[in-house]
Length: 407
Image (cartoon, rainbow, N blue to C red; front, side):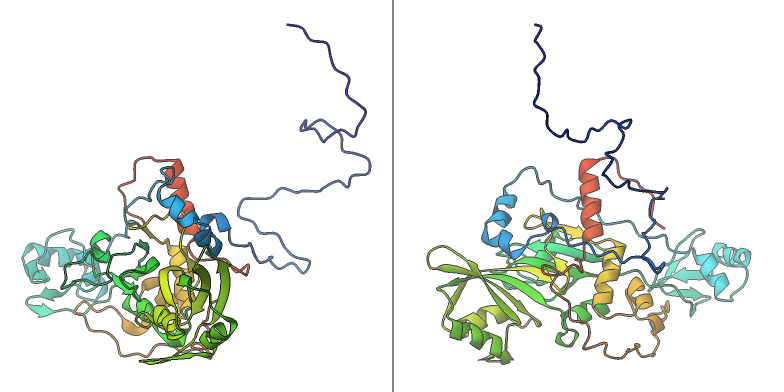
């Protein structure tokens, strides 16, 4: 069917997408030179401009999302597929004959000959050609332990969305469900929880394979701030809020919130956003009860600069990537070299399990300058961006996973 052309009124035309169109006379031409991927723009003095991008709210759960019910709605959203429950591959460990040769026991061929003769054992088992050893293994030559150096494994960190009804313990005498039953098995070592959440509290819970990192994230003197969304039965008065900010006396000492923010609510239930810099047993609940109110729901949405990822459903976990772990260890005040390995730098890594007695480096103001800014109110960003991006790529391109190891 033929239609007659319609005459449009004379108005300023919108810029067309045709590349041949000439720019408007009054428009200032934009000069763009060739730019390679990964290059950063330079400032006027020639130094690289710092990347200060605000944290993308659509990738994490903010306090407003909890109050609006978005956290509960995503739980029943079938489009939000759970992340792949597979740990990242570890680098290959060195071979036995190479480690012994580097320890000055002889050449690699000589070490292979000793292995063939059955004169070398690993963890009291006869060694074999091509065997690999890892941090913590005990190697003996002719029955005598050998001291050698192997780099300790890098720290691993999991972000877990704890549901209500699970306890944070390895073995519960009441046989209640525990958070550890859903975690993957480590090839070496064990998972350590960064703090605890009580039975009825839900939200973000971190696990790590590094005891040093777990201690720094938990200890109050490092100032790692926790953020909670608290639903209270009855509104808090201004006097009660000020009392919680100044400090209330509990059985185990005085406790105080770092901040309290109203979040609204329906009926007798009122939501509040609170922050605290320590993690004593049921501390938030006991503080609210100390001023005469009861907590009907408690959700942790942030630990330091690590925010609960959007789409991480209750009972599921996600492993942080290397870059996110570096940011987390740096926020905890760990030395960079030691943080990349998950242990102290001077600890060595002796095969017989002995560690060096060197003291950890303490920079000036390390203990007092590790408090984290609020990532929901600043442009510092949040930890986990790389891990979230990897999860999105895996969801968009669900292909076969490579079986090779990452170096």
